Length: 290
Length: 192
Image 1 (tube, helix red, strand yellow):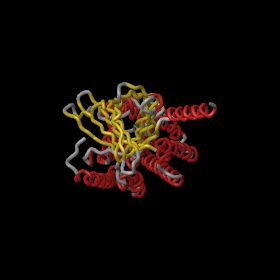
Image 2 (cartoon, helix red, strand yellow; image 1 turned 30 degrees about the horizontal axis):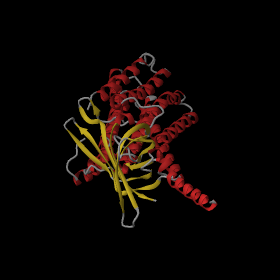
Image 3 (spheres, chains in turn brown, cyan; image 1 turned 120 degrees about the vertical axis):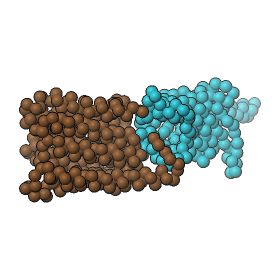
Image 4 (cartoon, chains in turn green, orange; image 1 turned 180 degrees about the vertical axis):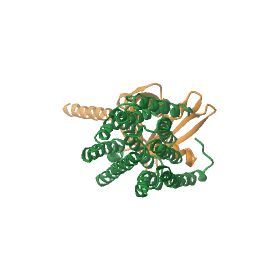
């Protein structure tokens, strides 16, 4: 199986789009930057899907296809909320609509065949709120830290999600999360090149919709344990809360130690639960390797 | 003369009624199953099974045009006798059975192709994609169950390209899991 292309292609696409987004190093406050970050993340995910399993059909037939197109929509529409970021009402309004739409689009088959009305309302509300809260947490973190801190955090989160999904019985979804990690890797390289670049603006929303979409799909459609799903979904919120509660006198570099320490701890526990569940099945039978 | 004529009419009508209606059968999931075979890494073939097949059959041995079959295979019942692999196969990479719990076939036309062989064309649906396929099916025979009900059964072997249905994961030029999947469906049905 081709492992390299789904990693290299999203990284190259993301880096290229970021660089082309209105000469971002010259005008770091320009809206084109916000737009560029969101579109870079969405298009790189699309490119990763094409490299891994081909072009998703439209209209989408599976939840993964829906997620790819939802990411593109969030990439275009979601960047607008970052442009109007000073007004909380349109910002939250757009986020709620996008998150709810993405949730409905991905899980409509469960709503039609498996869930009753109460479960549909309950789960869609839960998924929508988790996307909005994680989006807000990561966006707030990105506001507080320039440079490569946020792309590095996103990369770590995407890598952990990827590993957990592979143990959660979906190598494809794990690799798709790996595509997101590759795009974040491109952002880290660009951020190291110019620390002033707010690469995460706009991209954060698309990133959250994709990663939480993969996690919830991993729980509902694959075999990702609920504990792992919940821990990984809660990780961005926990990290932002920790960072926000730290005294301001602690300088940026020192703040990163507990931030990344907690990321490693929370995601590590999540991966351990996924691995334990995988081992339970694998130990029943002879060894099974994809 | 009038009585004879009336009797002849009644007999003709009765005969026509019998000839007009094919027998209705219900698929017995206990004695029906779907088996599949797929190439693994170019080296060998791996077999799997979906033991839960349900549906209905309308069958007239004398007139294939009246025949119809509807099958539903429970994709959640996939078994390759390896727990880890079954979990992977059930997931989004392959059968995605929580999202698409059934693989279905509904015939649109039957043609007699031999004494006990039929060419059946119909709609095969998997992973939310429906394609028209034509399969050759053998009529195995008739029997009776313990309750005295008439049984009949069919078996068909056919091949699909899984990528036609969006099952693209793991397909690669240099190996992986084969594109072509050979499926054997064998079912027994009980006359209603």
